[in-house]
Image: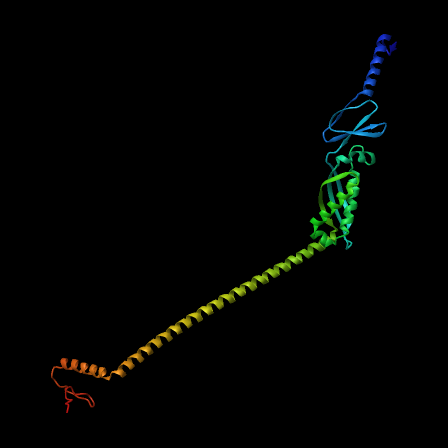
Length: 297
């Protein structure tokens, strides 16, 4: 037999043909399969699912087929999902949803939705529907003020929705949450006015606090002066009372013993007599006393 310019013996050609047939037969009846980590092996027989193989080596008869089905975490990106608030304000958001197929739902998902575990298109559609439904429950101001609650509502609703497809939500990342430009300008203006109002209120409160402080200081100083004056008045009154009491006691003592006064007068006259040198004054004024001329009867 000739192939082009090459002549091949019939015996060799027969052996090549037999080898090819053997390789095809071995490939057709090869019983060994490998299920990678993070996957499950879906075993089918003439198109019908007959079993699920775990990770590792799987040995199957030639009339069965194994398809690897991922149960690893997958990511679905939703760009520019649109919604409308209850007060008819349009709103957009971009989200990333991480999900995985529940291990006990592999057979169901393989039959109905995906042969490899990729549900990205279902997740994107479900997420946009949920976003529209949730945002319609909030006014635009509430959607801004209660963003954490909005995210929680979307998360809960999406978990229920994706559970219908055999998927479980791992987490949702919301980003680029925005309204129309005109509404955002209005919001910014409102925030600016609110900040100015708060600044004015704070300044007024500061002035009021300073005035109250000044009044308190003035009242404290006045009270201190009053207390000082009251103290001085009380001290003077106490001294006056003490002096009056002393005079009263002295007068009472003198009134009870008149001889004491006479005795003191005699003592004074005696002291004067002891100091007199015997000379009479050269000039005597009218009414002036003359020493020792008071002769008794």
